[in-house]
Length: 282
Picture 1 (spheres, helix red, strand yellow):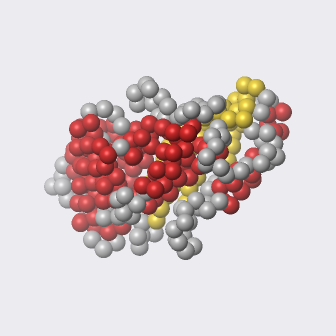
Picture 2: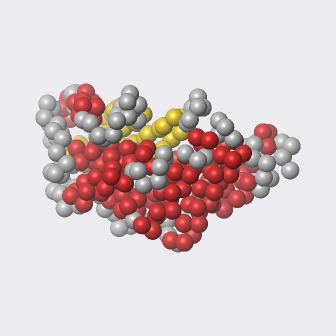
Picture 3: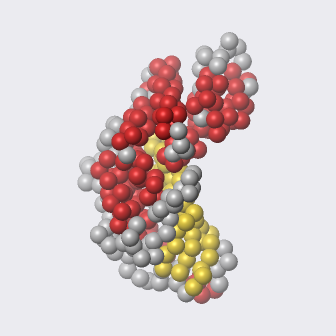
């Protein structure tokens, strides 16, 4: 598993910045020295990014941060990647002391490392899920175990938020593991493996499978009748790819259908419907 870590210091005094001198290499070593899965994947690695932006240091050795978590995977036989995970986590606080030992221990809550562990398993789970529905379950379960431990942990932030539509790690993994969201996970597999990965061979069939997956997610959203974090994250991640991949779809009302499925990105779909690449489609 490859990861990149970067930081952007905002309103940190000299001592707080100095304390972070070795943070990047130490965290990189922590992520890349641990074997997160026992599956034999050969030399394949998941391309992921973890960007930690330091927002402040309200007391000595204590930091408030915003994080971006992203991952990609290749599309079969096409010279491009597709985004799988794209999450912004704006509620994370932890203590860090320069040269402290970063030791992997999932049985103990740590405000810094438990969040790292959580996202590593989330990324792996999503990646496996795009190849076969259900294959991400062992990794999602690990992420849920970490979230459950964190909920009672001292110094825990960002694991629960009872306000609707506000991201929290705990609610996100609860949705992924909830049986009522089973259609979402089935749709992930259909969208990526039976859709994008089929484009090299049969673009028309691939788009039909992608649309079927999107309709499945849209129907699920209507059925639960409340804004789901995992569905919002999916469309916020994929809408750009979706609007581009359907430019040559022969259905003249395809973008109207996409708007009904994903109304949050209506403007983007309306713009795509007027793209010159759509000329000649009736």
